[in-house]
Length: 365
Image 1 (spheres, rainbow, N blue to C red):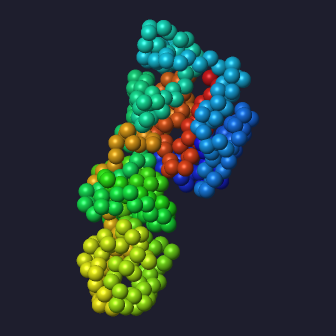
Image 2 (cartoon, helix red, strand yellow):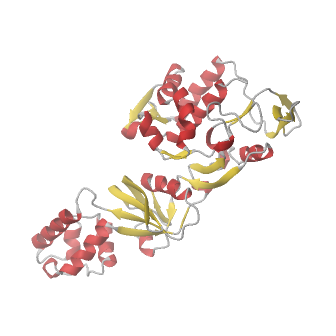
Image 3 (cartoon, helix red, strand yellow):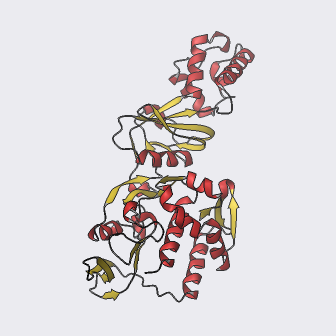
């Protein structure tokens, strides 16, 4: 639901336009959100990585808390009511002013203020079909190109698919774009039938989404990040010495997951049935290289149907960060993922939605 980290850590996890969110987060941070939810009947817990969940582990308990808050505030909720467009008029100074919304059925709802909080373009079955971008454009706003983010990555390397289903923990992933390091994290990942996934990969995809016109991208895996190159080399030499007459594949099972041991021999051009005492220095170097710098070429990322969030959206330069009000249309506000703001996985994007939504709701005309 959110991430209970310190303020500096929160902004360190925001990928796009963190400075724009300073006022919003200061007005309604993770602790304010947790208080709101608990005061409305849902107990929370904080788990590894400061991630906050309902004690029940059921998302509908968060929804129930929000429903209780709506009820207390006497908010009228209209379900299955599609908005066709915003209604704006020009004032005496020829400046656009919001007047309400026009529904698809032709009904007009008059309002002095309107908040567009339609979400991005991900999870379209929930209603986030991109209408918010259209509303914004019709109101004169520009939209930064939208892309899927927090999404698995695809690789055309055949050996990657051979590891389908293999999960790695305590691995370090580095994302390189045109040979420049763009992201590094230690954690968990998963090999799939199309490439790679898992928490580290999802976060790396958000960084990649913010980079335009690159020629080549790849991730480098350090399978033993707790050991330096020299330390791992010593361990490998020790394993080989202890193995002596045993086949190489047998001692590699002590170092890697069994499904990975055979493949790393293939990638390193070392015969898996070779006796440990016969493994030469150059072969050992190749095993070492593929342990500390295993490169996976990235051909693309998966589509919006698998993306957790949307990168891109309404240009934040056209929004007042202290109120979330449009600089182009008086009385029109925006909040959440429809804006060009996004963050890594771990509850940060939900907090952005709540913080910007709260600020928009509190702002006066």
